[in-house]
Image (cartoon, rainbow, N blue to C red; front, side, top):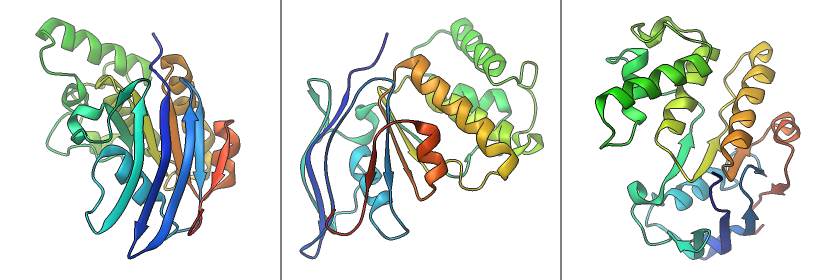
Length: 214
């Protein structure tokens, strides 16, 4: 079942009286809104506001909603907004399966947890890789595991923080297809921040150009 739309309602973020971000948008389930801009234009600040981790030196007005649910005042752990970062950020002290288990919500029984992890490994093309050290995976394999760990947490929306920026050119197209296919399959409203027009083209959705006062 698709998640509800992600709605940014008159969202305004400013610092010391200077507006950094102005954004009104509705992101339907399964669609990707790309927010483009150079370093320092406010992309990371926008994502921090959406997940509830905005530094208090910034002023933020407006609302963030998932359908009819206003999550603006909720703590990060209750927003159910997942984030995929530029680096995979896999835990080095856990196996590949252990990293995936970390994403499974609490309260899921042990057998179902194992089943979900095995399904995620198969989806990543890594069946049988559960006991492996994540350091032994290629960059593309690590990127797949990182995404599926986020998805195992059952987010209602997804934020992509330049997740393709550090991948080799040969891997980028493959990982883009993998990521955006899962966005569509799961019906997740998604916001991608990037400075790469090729990312926006692959996402296939609307594009918002971000600059000071945008």
